[in-house]
Picture 1 (cartoon, rainbow, N blue to C red):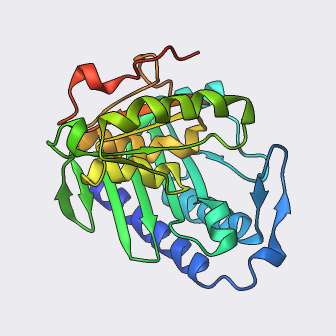
Picture 2 (picture 1 turned 135 degrees about the horizontal axis):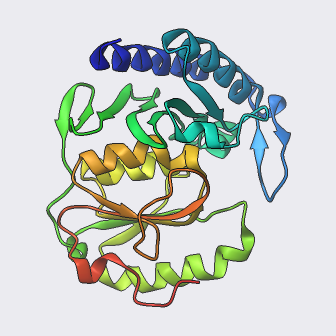
Length: 265
């Protein structure tokens, strides 16, 4: 299958996932708790993932599948070779549960253990972001680029790693470090969307102490293709195979402002 045809198929699947999200009714009643602090799943998370497994498997039958729900959440040695889809059916489930926005569907296609194609869809505003490695990043088909503004003229996004409360003290210490050096701080509740915000030029930097692969795989590629630098908080390349800290900076954020000025454990 041609790469553009493959991308179109993934985009169609993402839009249909968004339609399922928009059809949701009485979401709170459908929620159950998972392991960890304030970690919830709704019937719609499971419904979207089941749909994506079917649609993406039909699109590329030889590809593996990694998804947040229903026990499909393990990156295996087999996923280091060939193709594997990595899916977050609803990133921002707490937002989805409470009616706050945004919530997004995130789909990455890994090739030989690294993202090759990425799509993030925010259905409430019909915003579809996409990238193919080496081909640039796009919003609804139009090219996007990260901001050229310095940190002092940028917003900084962050995530709280809510399922790892032991990371809270350091998370907010980093907030205190960045706050005097930027315009202000923002948190959307969806890490994939926060990374896309850097790619679109809305923010200049984003960090979180720990994200899962399905949180950062698609949006991380989109950010890279929009000109961002994205690594873990030590400056090492992202592993693309499981949990990692993540920091992403736009083109305009200087190297000396990129990393925190306090030690990160």
